[in-house]
Length: 163
Image (cartoon, rainbow, N blue to C red; front, side, top):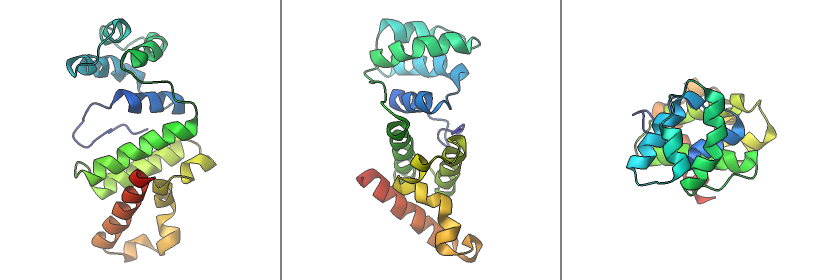
């Protein structure tokens, strides 16, 4: 899930990685490279440095070190899947609102979250979760202009970050 992270391949934040860990959608093989980037970004800590030194082939080892490394980065464990979804949805909304991601990318990320979380009710409780039913709300989405769809996604993103 969320394989693209950002259209430009931006390294996810430690908080976003913590959310993916809770949702069990983490690409553990990528975490050591992200940890190395976090060290360059002035995060620090013994466990973070150890995680950055791993190859990523042993995903169990990565997952075992990750909670301590996230603590080094100042990220508290997320208490629930709902909290993890909030972090993930906020990331999607911020990517779009900052102009770093097209509205279609945002919708595709919502679809991946919904499917990746087994259509659980929690995924629909956030404002961006409503994009899953965009065709139910609007009728056939293909009858809408791209500008209309982009506006709907933008409004959902604004509501998401204001929540």
